[in-house]
Length: 122
Image (cartoon, rainbow, N blue to C red; front, side, top):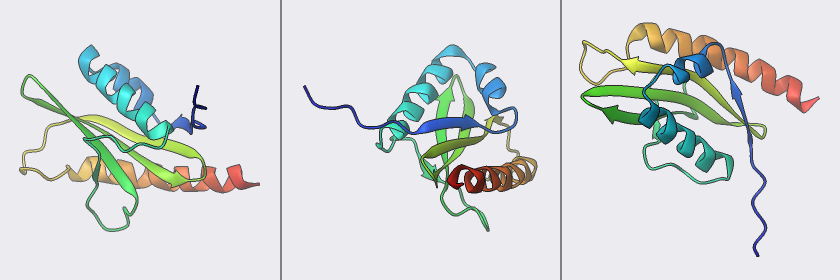
């Protein structure tokens, strides 16, 4: 029997876990499976780089259900931890762009994750 790969830990920044728990069950299950894929070193099919200045290595998982768009934003390049920065139902009125309010929250939580990862090194 093959050894299981070492799983990365998942840390939830801010209200991201509570926000994910508010999603419909099929969306929660899909994101849960995709986060597990990340934990074992695989890349989920829905993972896409998040566009934006100073958001290198930040990705989003995408899910659609009954016409609604859901996102889970994470960074997996800090230590051996996957930081889930933000989970939200996308309500963009500007087409495909992530709303500015959500990008600001992601940036502020990214700073928290970077600080936390520095402490994890010590």
